Every structure is written in structure tokens, then in C-alpha cells.
Amino acid sequence: MTATSDTAPSSDAPPLRVRLKIQRVNPEGTPEHAPGEEYWDEFTVDMHATDRVLDALHKVKWEHDGSLAFRRSCAHGVCGSDAMRINGKNRLACKVLLKDLNLAQPVTVEPIKGLPVEKDLIVDMEPFFASYREIMPFLMPAGETPERERLQTPEERARYEDTTKCILCAACTSSCPVFWTDGQFFGPQAIIGAHRFIFDSRDSGEWDRLEILNDRAGVWKCRTVFNCTDACPRGIQVTEAISEVKKALTTGNV
Image 1 (cartoon, rainbow, N blue to C red):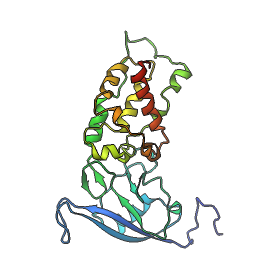
Image 2: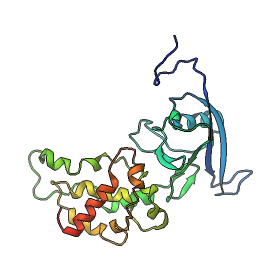
Image 3: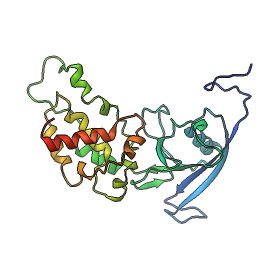
């Protein structure tokens, strides 16, 4: 029986010829390329339409070139480890289906921008996490520890619900033109990471965080380009959250 479902292709369905054009860099060099030199490598693999870019990268690594380096873990859009630039846009490789791409052209895959490349598609995430740590991403409640949990109304929870969905993939921050060019800018993720606690009714450290974001490297660097919102694989309204932090600083109201 021939399967008709888009999500369950039959085993005898004709494969798709997918060309992957991958940006590579090897810190140790190769016979053809100097240490640290960027170059493009192209591979052709047979895939199904419902396969993901991550599946195609796996096929390249397992069947064509085992030296290809990229991060991945859960493969379900939860861990955020496989953020990369796919056809010029920041995406999670595990969430981009091949059928949604123009396969008449090579699928270009590059490391996310603004962070040092360690090898191929792997970047050094430490500058990203350093900014996140600086905004103190943990609850700082006031008063004595209660005997039971700290309660909130549904309305209080809804105030920061959106920014709790962040998975620290760096897709938003590394899509920001200001982050690419200004090495001091915290970046969108650090701001929404702070937002999640600034507007939490149980927290008492909102003004400590706002003072940090009021710095020249903070929230005022944002130019409202909306790249960050488009890049977020969790659908967080990043630009809106940044605007709410700016408003809190301007009005003095949280």
C-alpha cells in the first residue's frame, strides 16, 4: 500500500536529491585549506521530503565526511543546541523540514553569526552565556522563606509567561545586527532573560536587573529590527519584551 500522509512516506517513495552547501572551518587546517580558513563544502544526499535539515547533516556526517562538526542533542526543538543559519536565516536544524525549502537550489548551512567559530557549525557560546549570567537569571524573592509555595494569580503569571519559553539557543541574539557589530551589547536573549524575572511578582531584584540593562551595553542598543522575533524557534515576542523593559526604565513602573 502506498502511503498518502505527508508525515509517513512509504519506504518505496522516491528520494529527493538534496544538495547541502556547508560553510566549514578547521582550526587545525586541512590539506587544501589553512588553519582557520573559511570555505564552502558541498554534498549531495538522498532524503525524504519530511526529513529535516538535521537528518541531512547526519547523513553527510555518517556516510560522507565524519569530520563535519555541529551540535545537536534532543532533535525535537527543546534543547536549542542545533541553532544555525539555514538559507541565510537563524533556525533550529531539527525543526526545518526539507519539503519547506527550495530544493532546486543548494541548501546553505552556516554557523550562527557574532560568536567565534570553533569548527564548522560549532561556535563558542561562552560570550552568550556570560551576558545571560550578568542579568542574574534566578529568582530573588524578598522576606522569609514561606512554609508553602509562593502563590501568583493567573494574571501575574501571564505578565511574563512568554519569556519563560526561552531555550537559550542564541538564535535571537546571533540574528541581531547590533550584536554582530558591537561586542559590548548584551543581545536580545539576555534582555528577555531579565524580562522573565523583572515582571515576576515573586521577585524583588527587578531594579537591580533594570540598572544593568540601563547600561550603554544594555537595552538601549536595540534598534527594533525584529530579526530576533523572526529567529525565535519558540515564537517568543522578543521585540515586544524588549520594548516592555524599555518602558519600565522610562516610566519607573514594573
